[in-house]
Amino acid sequence: MTNYTIEDWAAGYISQEQEYDYLIENIEGEIPPNLKGTLFRNGPGLLDIGDIPLRHPFDGDGMISRFTFENGKAHYLSRYVHTEGYLKERSAKTILYRGVFGTQKPGGWLNNIFDVNLKNIANTNILYWAGRLLALWEAAEPYRLDPKTLDTLGIDYLDGLLKKGDPFSAHPRIDPDGPTLVNFALKAGLTSQLTIYEFEKSGKLIATHAHKIPGFCFIHDFIITPNYAIFLQNPVNFNLFPFLFGLRGAGECVEFQPEKTTKIIIIPRKIPYDNVQTLEVQAGFIFHHANAYETAEGICLDSICYESLPSVEPDADFRQTDFSKVAPGQLWRFNLNLAQKSVSKKLLEPNCCEFPTLNKDYLGRQYRYLYLGSADSALKQNAPLQRILKIDLVTGEQRAISFAPRGFVSEPIFVNDPTKAESEDSGWVLSVVYNADRGASDLVILNAQDMSLVATLHLKHHIPYGLHGSWVDECFT
Ligand code: CO
Image (cartoon, protein in one colour):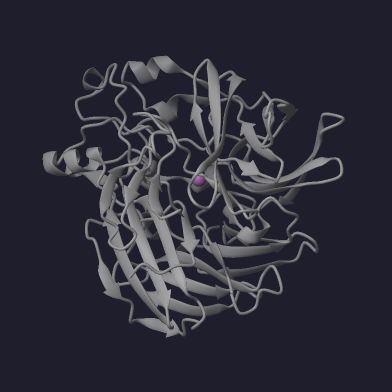
């Protein structure tokens, strides 16, 4: 039994060709007057190019949404990231690049053979740090945008830190101490290389260190505590041949090896950075971590784990996904004992969930409340995300708000209420919800304490399902 139709869900993946700039006026409820700042979101906006559908939504060009909240009003602005690939394909009106997740150039394998020239699509996350607004995609350099207009300013090499084609992860973490921006770059190969960067509030680089990791790595996200940067090396292999011969996209050549363990790589954030520890555990496949903190024995780590790697079958259309055939994301807690080099694990939420977020002041610290997108039904099977779920990790109590049967949620973002900083959950949770009833998206503002609906801002159009975003206390208009 499902609480949605696949047609409703798939309608949220129609390309959004238009860019918008307007004051949001169709509002139910009231925007809290003390909600002030900017919500930036990134995600694939084009799901077909020149009428050729993409094979995987992760191959879509990055479209930035900016919601500005000030004096109880909200303004919306959207712009595409003008990457080199976006501009060339827009003028050619056809697919010119191979996508990492399987989108091929037309013409079959003969036209794709040995073409390893991937397109930087800048579609995964958006970060504002030290005056720079950066659209991020893990396999290449960030693109810099103007926060006032969202105009693309070009590739940002971070003052010469990056070289042409260098990766820079789309999952930076901000240590509230400082605050300090921590990010990584992964160069995957037979031996992989992980480089960690730390930047202070002014933007100045304060640490960089590189580590060789045995074997192929597929690492999308990481997590930090005050003393450690923690990476989970998924049990995967890379099968180069179908990729080089043009038969499959790079993402489709990552082979999940469920019989193998996940390696937990713990890298010190303090000089001389060299006492790297590696623990092992059976953990399935992981994209995202919720949080981690240091304990008397070592580290407590919360992550979303899949029993198997979600993949797109060759020749399958993702718009027809049979969710019941894909393993659900589940929330697990791992307790790492560094002296004994042992790991114990506990399932915290068996029902399908993804996009974990928290009050950012608690990143890397002991915390109590976690917010996630989750499936509406408690069937322990995969389904689209239709609820925003809050979990109290101390009592196990859950609170949720559902937008089923016709609403589909995106990553929730927690925003502190500056007038009530007394508790971890004093604030709001924002999420873009695709409303199939209207064929358009809503921005919902929830009370983070009881998950009640504070306001629904009806946009004039839809925003294709996004990936990640961030909140900034400043306004740029
Ligand atoms: Co991600």
